[in-house]
Length: 233
Image (cartoon, rainbow, N blue to C red; front, top):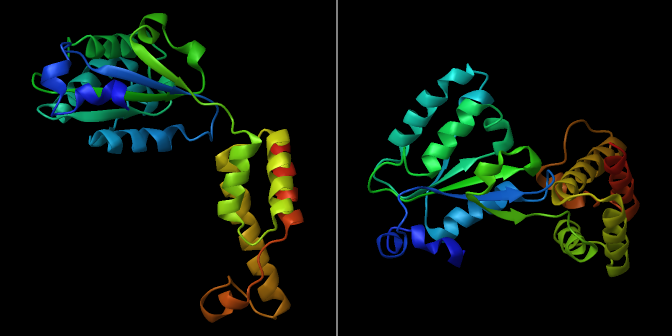
């Protein structure tokens, strides 16, 4: 965060001598927390996060890249902000969009009086033009290791024993699943446990209200089956 503190309103004028926006690229597989970190990053810098959808991502004609750049200029005029481009490799896969981004980063399209940090995510870093990569700071996100996976499972399945949490973390690391997969499995197993409980009680629907107190949590083997299923997808 300290690397980019100079773009905030309080420090920008003193420390940032470039008129152009800065580009921070978050690179890694899907589900590794890139979007969540982008949101956290903007909050840590005290910047509003603006989500931009370039024309190539919205199914519009690629020749409208210039119009998109003009719209972005209007949105950021006179304000310090973080501009978020999700899956940026999809947005600049043509020369028109790449040129618009290059101009924006170099200050050609930068509104006077603004300090903008462009935050992009990508899981295909190699597809980005080299001259765009040269303008960027790249942060790599790897799939979580067993230690971090155990922390995730502990937060989602606090009812399990330590040994069971360890087994879940080991299986998750072997399957190379992500934090998104952990959240999916935890939610899915909880829903299945609730439905199974209500079925045994001869009821219909989801577990809620007073019945929720009697709803048993999922078993460790339920989570393990989901992990294996996610790995096979």
